[in-house]
Amino acid sequence: MRSITIERPVGWLAVAATAAAAPLTLVAAPPDALQGDVQRLMYVHVPAAWVAYLAFGVVAVASAGFLLRRDLRWDRAAQAAAELGVGLTALSLVLGSLWARPVWGTWWSWDPRLVTTVVLLLVYVGYLGVRGLSTDRMLNARRAAVVGVLAVVNVPIVHFSVVWWRALHQPPTVLRPGGPAGELPVLMLVALLTALAAFTLAAASVWLRRIRILAATDRDRGVPPAGAAEPAVPELIVTPRPETSGRQP
Amino acid sequence: MAVGRLVTREVGIEVAGREATTAVAPFVLVAVLLAGLAFGPAPQILAAVAPGTIWLVTLLAAAPLARGVAAAEQDEGCWDLLRLLVSPTQLLAGKLAAMWLHLLITWALTAALVAVVFPAPFPLAAIVAGPLGALGLAAVTVAFGTLLAAGRRRSGLLSVLLLPSGLPVLVAGTAVGLPGSAGMPWLALLVAYDVLMVVATWAVFPVLLEE
Image (tube, rainbow over all chains, first blue to last red; front, side, top):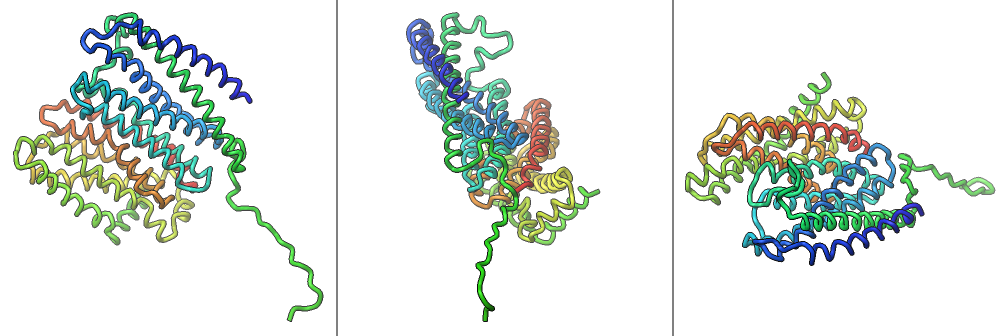
């Protein structure tokens, strides 16, 4: 009930932010002097990547939360975030490829950040795969939480790879020492930040909804809401022997 | 003391069964020779790809090593007993030390082969990177190996998880070995990776033992 209460305003905020971002990114922001209109892909590519990183951060925090609390609500939060992160990483890669073709002249490059982003995608696809290893809900949650904690090491490497390896990929424009001033025209920056807000709110809305659906699925399967661990030794069921008259031969 | 005994026990298991040796040594030999053939006879190209070949082969060898992390205990049915005798931290330290030794030998064997066959220069920083890279990689291998031992299905899936997790070692180890490369930042990256992975594995290891 409470999650539905939060879900609705977040959803409406996402709609409002998207309504503001669309004209800003498609009309108001000027086209890039060299790249032309194709540069507008940035307003989707960058927010998709940003929300994906955020989602993987949530996976790490929620996985740690599950390991500490053994509460399936943390696990559901991690699963929903991982699904979101995987989808948005894939979207970010596809959009990046579409952007790279006219600008770099190639669909794919062995740029470290591209490669590590693909690796990141693989690791979290693996994370989702680990969830199906057993029929035991708590065991799957425990294993996934372990992978979620270990996998987070890839996120900072992907982010900082552009600084460490400095290859073909464009260095950070907004999140860089000294801030974004002087790199982006003001209208472009406003459009990008609005698109970032729209993507973040939309992702939050989807995440909350997915958590609710996962909780409903668990409820249908008879899993306790908070996922109290099942006893290690199942209860002994004693079936009374039917009374018999006389001695058995 | 218990950690030392665990390492001795791991070495004893390996000496008796030679599981890791028979799985890894032929793989290293064939992989290095095939890499040399694939990259061609030009000495400049071979020198350029040599550091990457060393770490790629070492990283790939971690997958069969991961399957052996708890295989002997599972086969003998003494995994639960071992967990009762020593604390999770001691068990991890023993397993980690043994795996570090395995990976270090794998790296040294690969590096020696590459140095002879390719032939390539070997900067001092690249030699320092060997033990450093093997430590972080050993931590990840023990973690995923224990996870794999507990769930026998989908071993391919867990190998896919292990290899990308060793990516920082592949990148830093390769960069350190390149001619003219600044060694210190990459060695610092390897130290950071080691600390991160050992601490993360230490934190999650007791959970893996619950299965």
